[in-house]
Amino acid sequence: MNARTQAWLWFLQRASAAMLGFFVLVHLATMIYAVRSGLSAGEILARTRGNIPWMLFYAVFVASVAVHVPIGLRNILAETFAWRGRSLEVAMLGVGVFFLLFGLRAVWAVYAPGAGLP
Amino acid sequence: MDQATPPANTGSTIRVSVWRSSGAGGVASGEGRFEVFEVPRQPSQTVLDVVTHIQRHLDPTLTYRFACRVGVCGSCAMVVNGEARWTCRTHVDKVSADGTLEIAPLRNLPVIRDLATDMSVFFDKWARAKGQFSGSRSRTDDFAVVSPQSEERQQVDLGIECIGCGVCYSSCDVVEWKPDYLGPAAMNRAWTLINDTRDEARRERLAAVAGDAGCHACHTHMTCTERCPKHLPLTAAIAGLKRMTTRALLKGEL
Ligand code: SF4
Ligand code: SF4
Ligand code: FES
Image (cartoon, rainbow over the protein chains, first blue to last red):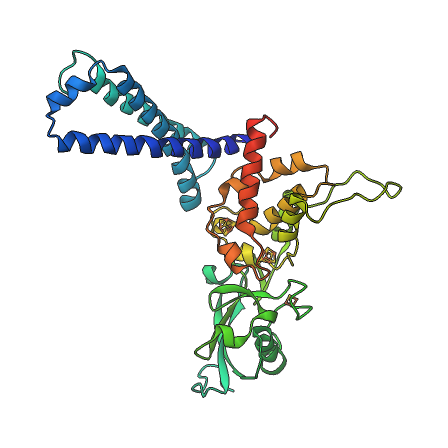
C-alpha cells in the first residue's frame, strides 16, 4: 500500500470519527428518550418500520463504523503485534465488510415493513 | 574500589549505574548489564561530568560520546534515570534527588558500545524525509527576500534550532512500534523546509512525509515535545504536516 493510500485511510478515519461523534449523540439521545417514555418494542417498531429518514440515518451510521473500525484496528495490530502487509489488509477489509453486512442486516430488520420482531 | 559491593552512599558521592553493553540491542534487549560506580559529588556537576569521571578515573574502557560540552553539537544524549536527556546540560541536582543515577544509551538506536549509539538510522531518516534544501537560484541571482514577519518564516524560526541530539527519537513510542517511522526530528526538519519559501521541492517532500511511516502515524503523544532540550514544538510541526498533506491529498497533489 503506498503512502498516498495510507494518507487517504488516515483522512477517512478522521472524517468517519467526526460523523460517528454526531451519530452516537443522536443515537444515545433517542435511546434515552425511548426508554424514559417507556416505549415497548412494538411501539418502537411502529415508528421505525418504513421510516426512510430513520433507515438512512442508521445505514450511514453503520457505514461510518465499517470505515472507522478496520482502519483503527489495522494501526493497533501493526503497532502492537507487528502484523503488516497484504495479509493484514485483506483481513481488515474482511472486518469492514463484516461490520457493513451485519450492521445493515440489523438496520433492515428494524426498518423493513412487515417483518416480524427481530 | 570493589565494584561488586560499593560502600553505602554518604552524600558526598553519587552512586551511578552505567549500562555496559554486550550487544547492540540496548537495555530493553538485555544485551548487557548495569555496572555500579561511586563518583565524588561536585558543585554544578553535569551528568556528562559524571560519565567522564568514570572513564578517566575508574574504568577507561567505558565508551560514550560528546564533543562540545555546551549543548550545541547534539552528540552526548543518553537515557538518564529513565528519560532521554542531553547530558552536558543536565545537572545532577536536577535529576538525582536521592544521590543515585542510572545512565543508559538512547532507546530506538543500535548500541555501538556502552553509552554510544549508532545514529546513522536517525540521520538516514532525515534524508528520507527530504531534509535537504533544494533551491533554484544560482550565485548570479539576487538574494531571495524573506520577511522575518511572514507566517512561513515564523514557523521556520520555531523549529530551526534542532541540534540533532536524538532525544526526541529515543523518546517516541511510535519509533519503537514502527521501526521505519521517520520520527519527530526528521519531520520537524521537513516542516522547516516546507515553510522555506525559497525551497522548490515542497511536493516531493510532502509525499515523503505522508503515510504510515510519516506524519500520519504520529499519535500526538507529545513526549518528543516534552523532552526536546531545545523546546521545539515537534508535535505541532507534525500536525502541520498532517494538515498540509491532507490539503494536497484532497487537491490531488499528493
Ligand atoms: S508526538 Fe508523535 S512524534 Fe512525538 S513522541 Fe508522540 S508519536 Fe512520537
Ligand atoms: S528536535 Fe530536539 S530532541 Fe529532537 S533531535 Fe532536535 S534538538 Fe534533539
Ligand atoms: S556535548 Fe555537545 S550537546 Fe552535549
